[in-house]
Amino acid sequence: LARDYLTDFELMILLAILRVGDEAYGVPIAREIESTGGRAVLLGAVYAALDRLEVNGLVASAVGDPTPARGGRAKRFFHVTPAGMKAVRQTQRALTRLWTGVPQLRGDGV
Amino acid sequence: MSVAQPPRLALALLEWCVPDNEPLTGDLVESSRHRSAAWFWRQVLFVILARATFGLRTHPRPTLQALLVSLALLALLGFHAVVAANLLNHLLVLNDVNWMETTGRYQRWQLPSTVLAFIAAVLIGRIVGRFHRNHRIGAVLAFSASATIGAYFNLYFFVPKMLLQPILPQAALQTMVAMVFVAGLFVGIGSRGNVAKTFQAGSPCEPLRS
Image (cartoon, rainbow over all chains, first blue to last red; front, side, top):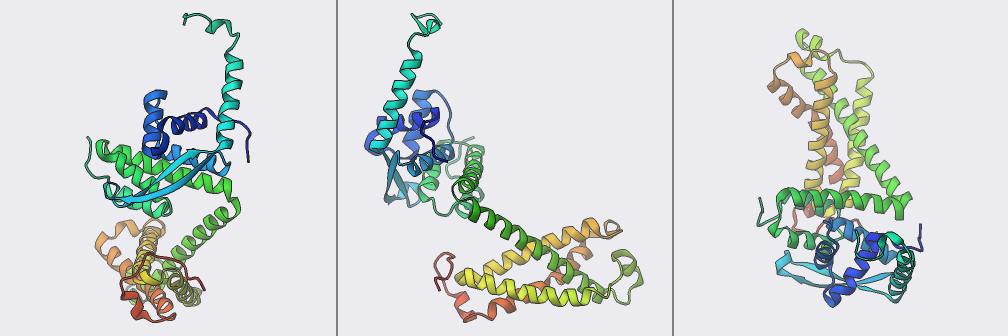
């Protein structure tokens, strides 16, 4: 079923793709989420989410040339589509509105 | 413990279950250099599970159909192998009262069932030959081995007093009795096209276009 919102993991993946840039394939995307998101991820989960995002038109992919370092297997490079950018901005605005005005999050207290 | 190469069995399982996602396989191989074998196995099992659930979500009907057909085919293979096993078991122990008491008496209905088993094996062989044109022998051997193991475990667990018998005669018996089924598979495969093509080096298994 198509959804009109992003899960936290899908949002992290979209942001990771944007941060990595042109070299965004599975390994650096997962590494980016692990290093900046502070959570271990399964590559299968990353690909499952990427497939879902691609079905929904939020990302697009292109297969590169095979490389010997990967046993002759090609990389699949991802980029965020305009629809994906729109979804990221919508989610950012929604989250910002939610964060704003929460007294427990004001100042530097924990 | 980190490994230089991913576990071969896990890699083979991944490529067999998810044959159309070469980039994912490459990513896992690339990431596995400084990881443990357990890490790789965990990744592979998750990928297979994720693929199954993704298929169910996006294409529920064909995925369920494929699942049911696979289960039915497995059940057919196991059943017919056991029927074949029973017939040859009867032939082997026809005059041996002790074996008769151990493995049960031959029933009249088993003869037509065995004929049907042979016919089913021929049909399955034709299907195998159609979908695995370049790997017919390998496919038949894989089917036969799984059917033999299934038949052996069926008899081992369900035939009265089987546990009292030494292991070697049982294994030898089951190996022999499964040959009826194997013969049927080979007849089925040989009935379609030129068998000599089987031995040619070919491309990976692919269904016929026609």
